[in-house]
Image (cartoon, rainbow, N blue to C red; front, side, top):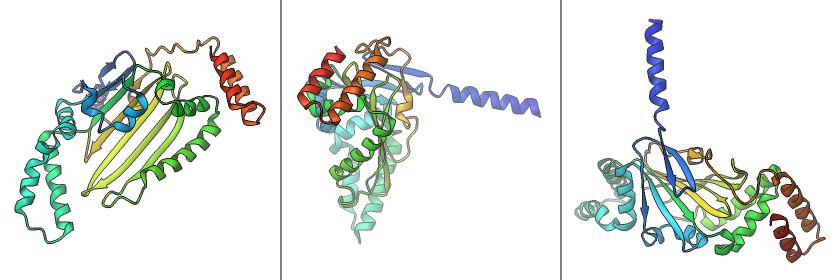
Length: 295
């Protein structure tokens, strides 16, 4: 009996170990550990630019966009962006034949139909990746300045900054003011990732037509170029949650600061930041001195 139990445990362990058995390489800029049945496709910028316009506006024109997921999930997500009318046409035709007694009955009908459509299309959620060939300084200088200020912060200061930015984000999203969409920020954190780059970790959850929608976004700079990874789940999904834990940093090479000099550089930047905060240095003097240290 004990031997049989051990065999079952070993088989279960081997099966669970092979769930994330594949690594997808996006332009040698990011490696993602994903399930074996996942693949990736590159979308043309104009196909995704409208849907993800807030990200494209910060990353510049030389931005590449990728979908990662099962073949069926990629197709569903792609249709949702580029051929939404055809995708939802069967539901719209059914609605035209219905005579709803109330808004609630209509919402219940739509939610059931959307769930049936996703099951039919075998949608299991999607991962997307945005990578840019341009330095953030050249595409969104305001955001670049924010990242530069985060580089010299300690953990406590980063936590305080996270709370402030979360408040600003709530205002921009106008939470609670969108009819029928119960939208909330379930997580927002600024942290240092494994390549010592300030990274933002954001999770947003919503409910529309009685269907849960979850969005995860993780962004950071690698060699001063932005990388943003996201996962989107409508309803129930598989293999896409915990997006930041899927990043494989094992082959990551950061060229902006050598490991030998980085402790001294960070120390000098922190001293410089203290002088700027105390008013000893002007903003212009601070920027010039910072560039001199980094160079």
